[in-house]
Picture 1 (spheres, helix red, strand yellow):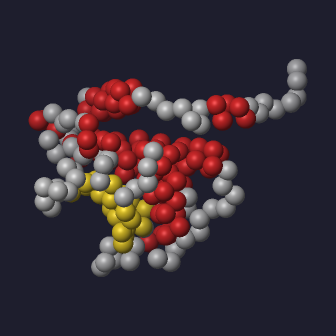
Picture 2 (cartoon, helix red, strand yellow):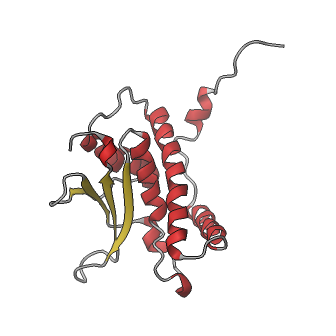
Length: 188
């Protein structure tokens, strides 16, 4: 019996770096996830909470994977740095582009909003009439919450859809409001 420890082979980490799954595979997986949760909940709010919880688990793993693949040597120690990391590096890893904007809520110093004008979920998911109030972006909100919480910045993230102000704007903007919890003990 050998006493050597098993190590994760480096080519495994690098083999999938430039590969991406086709959108139809992702859409099927997400539709099945919604169907699975829909059969086990009683309300739309409970379904969104389950999506948020699933997103948090994914977010923690995404953070680890991004750190491994990008070979970061330092961790962000301030809130704004962690938010920039999330809207640039993590967003590009997940969606292939940066978030459209990161804004601070004027009245509250511990709240921020991430805006994405072309969110993948909002564009291609059709919600049945019995689930009319469902916001599928709760999964993405959970991912953001998982990334920030695992980075040491406990927060609560909510997903919202913003209607366009006029016809020249995007069809539906996705807003993710981030409220950092008092126990985070970080300066804003």
